[in-house]
Amino acid sequence: MQPDPEDRYTEAEPANSRSALPLIIGGILLVIGVAVWFIFSGEESEPAPPPPAPEKPAVEVQEPEPELPPAPDIPEPEPTLPEEPNKPVAPVPEPEPALTLEDSDDVVRDMLAPTNPSDIVSSALLNENLLERSAALVDGFSRGAVLTKVLPLPEPAGDFAIIEQNGVAVIDPASYSRYDKYADAVASIDPDLLANSFHRFRPLLEQAYAGLGYDPEDFDNALIRSLDRVLDTPTIDAPLPVVKYEAIYQYADPELEQRPDLQKQLLRMGPENLETIKSQAAALRRALLSPPPAM
Image (cartoon, rainbow, N blue to C red):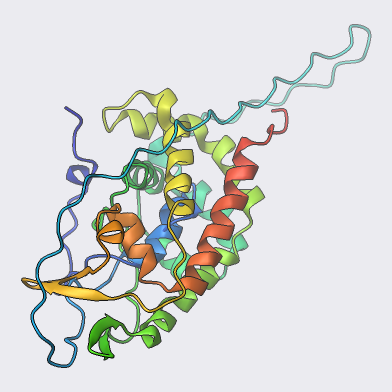
């Protein structure tokens, strides 16, 4: 039995804790950590009520969707070639102390902060234990889960709303604009820099992943699987019908309702923001699976 990654973090949730929506792609991962997190941390668990409508039956539980195909390995950097035998050898400087998880936060901030002036990224980087949080987020996303306690971020402005169209309750398209700045923050991130950051911090990320009870060598597969979860989210241009079940709203389409929580949250961003997130996820996936530079 694997430990629950959220058990390692003890921050109290806000009094009006939201079910998710400031994260995926983002960082190393703050991006995968910080991007999807942009999307989810801070969403109301119950949106604003719609106009009175007839009570709808609960959505029928469907068979779970097929699992994603196995994620490929992210290639390791090639070792640096040895110097030619007769070539003069430059003096070797004193090696810097090896970076550890305990002292990695400042290095992560220095590497990622200049790339994205967004207040969302800046807020994420104020947290401590960034690599451990990133590993926990990647673990959750790889399973389609949204771990709402792991990376606190600012909540979206305004309220998530339901309206009625032709007698059907749907997500108010005006609510999508609440997530524009989160999608813009993800769009401003350089996927190649993130891939290079992954290789820089890979040993520590694998160590943090092992701390959750997993094989450290599986971390790269979990990261690719997280991106595949994002890319597998359908882009739907039409209004999304919902039905109220007890105190929450569910998608009226059983195929959508049976999808992982991560994808159901991404759908709430609206089709344009979702396409922005998916485009960055695809670019980061390509960068990670490209041969890295020699180290």
